[in-house]
Picture 1 (tube, rainbow, N blue to C red):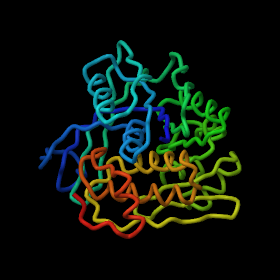
Picture 2: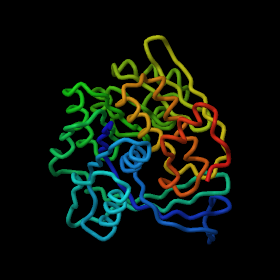
Picture 3: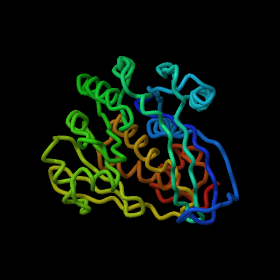
Length: 304
C-alpha cells in the first residue's frame, strides 16, 4: 500500500452554513453547524486514507482538549498520528468557516504564532517507509526537514503552496520535487496574475515541476514542453472547504503510486470535484472507486 507522509497543520473547523457570506458588520444567522477536522496537511492525510493509501500526519497541536480531539479524529479515520507532538502552553489551531449556498467559504483561523516556531524538527525528517511526502506552508522548518529527507531518499515530494509566504518560500521551493500553488500564492510569489507567466517566473528559481490550482478554472502546470491545462470536472458545488487539500493529498498519493504528473493532476482534479459536490469539509472527501468511476465517466450525480 502506498504511504504518504503529510507534514504541517491540523485544525478543528467550526462550519457554519449561511445563505450569503457577510459583506460587513452585523449579526448573521447560520442554518446549519458542525465540527470537523481541518488543516491543510491533516486534510491531505485524511484524503490519502479515503483513497486507499496509508498516511502519516506529522505536526503539532496544543496540549489541550482541542488537540486531543484533532488527533483522535485523524486516528479514527486511520491516519497514523504517532508523530504528532503536543505542545504545552499553546492552544490548538481552530477555524470558523462560513459556507454559503453556492459552496464558497470564508475562513477565520487562529493558529498561535509560537506553535510552529522553535523546537525539534526530527519527527518531520523521519519518512521511513514513505512513497511520497507532502508539506504545507504552516511549519516551514518541518517542511524543509521533510523535503530534504524525501530528496535524499529519491521519492516525490509535494509542496502545497496555498498562501503567500514571507520571502516567497525560497528555502522550500528549491528542494521540493513538485510545487503546487494556489492562484493567490502564485500571484504574490511571481508578481503577476497571469498564471502562465507566473509559473515561468518561478521556474527561474527552482527546477521543481510547477502547477497552480484555480478552482473552477482547473489546473495549469509547467514542464519542459510548456504550459498545460487540466479542466475542472463539472459538478454542482455544495462546499469547497478542503477541496484544495483533497487535491494535494490525491496528487501526492498518485505520484507515490508511480503515476506521471499529468495523470496525477487528472486523478487529483477528479477527487477535488467530488469533494466539492458534498458538504462537511473533510467529510466529503471521496473514496478510490468514486474517483475512478468519475474518470471513466460512470459516476452518477448527485452523489450521496
